[in-house]
Image (tube, rainbow, N blue to C red; front, side):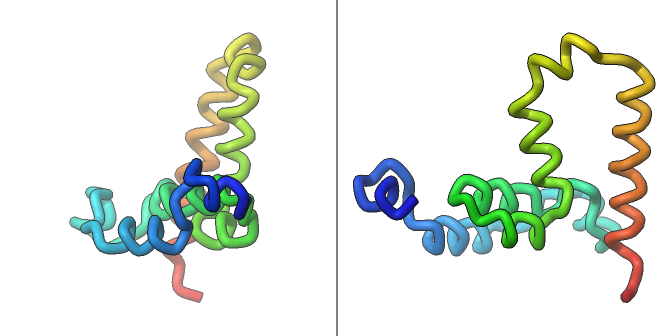
Length: 104
């Protein structure tokens, strides 16, 4: 991965994360309720995945890894799509959003 940074194909990860952290939050759930939705932290997580840092991606948002795998397998998922799978996905997202806001 350092090779891609060194030849200019990818920006420095820390500089990219610093730039991202300087932006205000855009999630309405976070802004108005102060809670993290199921997708909060996903941008950070995908940047970590871009640099193959799976541990940090999981720490930013635990759903980032299954979501990234789902995006990679999208053609296969699309072929066998169903309403039941969509409902299960919605249930998982909702459950994760609730669990990540519980005080530990």
